[in-house]
Image 1 (spheres, rainbow, N blue to C red):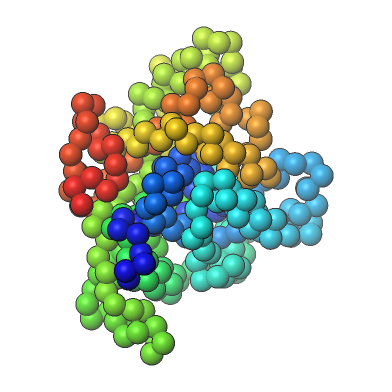
Image 2 (spheres, rainbow, N blue to C red; image 1 turned 180 degrees about the vertical axis):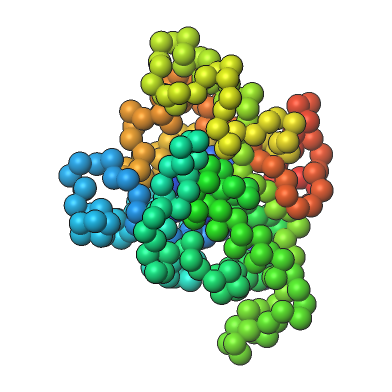
Amino acid sequence: MSEMPDQRLLLVHAHPDDETIGQGATMAKYAAEGRGVTLVTCTAGEMGEILVPELEHLAADRDDRLGEHRRGELAAAMAELGVTDHRFLGGFGRYRDSGMAWHADGYAIAGDVIHENAFWRADLTEAADLLVEIIREVRPQVMVTYDQFGGYGHPDHIQAHRVAMYAAALAAVPSYRAAPVADGGLGEPWEITKIYWGAMSETRMREGLRMLRDAGDATTFEGMDPDGPLPPFVTSDEDLSAAVDACDHVEAKMAAMAAHATQITTDGPFFALSNNIGATAWGVEFYRIAKGAQGPVGEDGFETDLFAGI
């Protein structure tokens, strides 16, 4: 225990690249500051869309080797962020990307065909136990995952939310499988002090869209009106709790995004937003508090540090 950093953050994500898009700057900032950062990825993203033509043969309906490739992309991205502790839930290949389809109303849903070991089909207690063991080993004070809708409805995001929240509850129960791991237990109980759900600020999103449209860009985040309805992953500012300013680390975040080359293209919406708006587009990351008390806040009413008050 004495070798552990004093402050430790655990992030639970569904696929490689989700972590970088959502919290890459925070991860880089905390890693640079010597805080513990542990990433748990629940699948290898085997069903993801492939944006690199010469790698299209890796797709699930062809060679079905995208997961192996994305494993390497994740390792490269974590190297850019300075994160050395990243794991797959239950080990690489334990759970497969469930895939998704688009609902007519514009959010993700489960597809018609789902692999038998898809994460969406995972037994909740079994999957949670795998995470309980990690929680009790790492002993994080703060955990970050998705909201109950998984941001935009992806079944793996929703399942990651369920598994993370259930595991956090089980990990704290003194009588729940508290024997040492060597004896078949899950380790000593640990209660996570603060849990956050990643979020996108409505104000920041509208400002960004407005700047893009004013610059003549009508295709980035196509269909989104700066003054109209926004998708469910955008959160009203009154529901936000924390805004971590990691603009000094935005270059590391963008490099990590570029490392996820099969999923994120440098001429796509993420880079377009950054190019038009600057570092704050992706360097300030927002959160909703789901467990624990909000700590001291800045002038805007947001915590500036996820460990605030601990």
